[in-house]
Length: 207
Image (cartoon, rainbow, N blue to C red):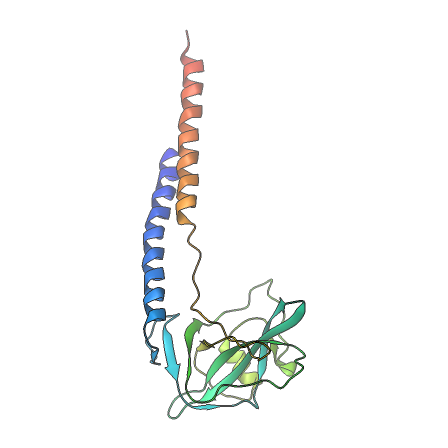
């Protein structure tokens, strides 16, 4: 048991080093200009795509309350010359906006988000109403009448303008970095185990 606890603590320290490398990579991508999309780019790369944004083909993803208003993310495809259409998460908007949605013009910058897959406890999608709770490009694209779409989603990055929707994200995502406290927890269990064993041994071996 002591070896297992020490091993888990060491593994968390190794994960911490890996996570710091990933966070440094994300920070560097955020500082640098977006690069043209390519199929072999890693997840969460900051890229730029060009094409025709089909604002007439819109789906909604998720459910999120902001300022006491229920809303969701607006998903629309970009038709690209010589490549499969790519779905773009244009940002959050109220489900019942007071003003018309304002869509970006020209090239769209953002980060790549890998496809999600529905689990046993995932909320059920409603393709007929184009309402989705799992960000999986294939079924969303099919609901929009697209036979084939890129296997990743571009999450648009842009300025947040009051009262203007969709409201895109402003930064790349940062995964949580809790590995150090997890390591301390496992090492703490190991120290506790040693103390309990020493107390037990002292009591057992006492003449």
